[in-house]
Image: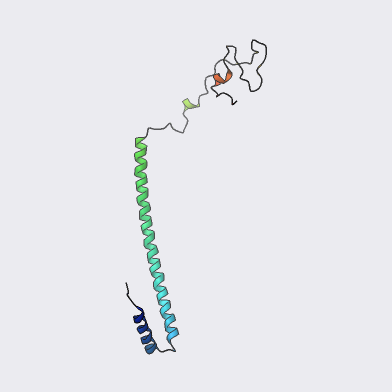
Length: 135
């Protein structure tokens, strides 16, 4: 923006020393430094405000796109069963005839881990719809 070369800076320093004088030069440089610091602080504050406004605008745009995509997905997908149970869902399963452990025809009772068999020869696991035990 400002194209100042080394020779131009040297000329500015010489003019400043002649006009201000070598005795007041440190105070003048401190004052100039404070002004430059204030200008930088104001410009940084202004830049941070602009960046915040841009981020907010981008966030609003992303939220709008997300809402549109969410609505499109909700319309396109079939309705899932609701998570709130209804009265029909709360009914207890209908139990079949109670199963009692009876010794099998060879006279031995089922041991722990062995599937118990009912009187008609079906295992209790099949009746309760359980997966088979691990090997």
